[in-house]
Image (tube, rainbow, N blue to C red; front, side, top):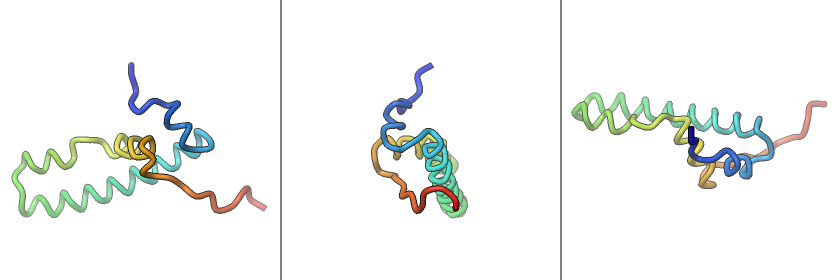
Length: 82
């Protein structure tokens, strides 16, 4: 099975696999919320084939592609818990 983008590329953009998981999940949630908002509006004005094209790619896939392309990053606010 081939996974795109490659895990090595993704891990080069973050400091750990745990950070990758958190960043990807947060971005996927943002994309999902945006898609649902667009889809709800589209239901009022668009035909069914147009609506399907909006939601054809899964939010996590989009999030991982954005991370791989360098379009999404993160900022570590603090180190450890004191």
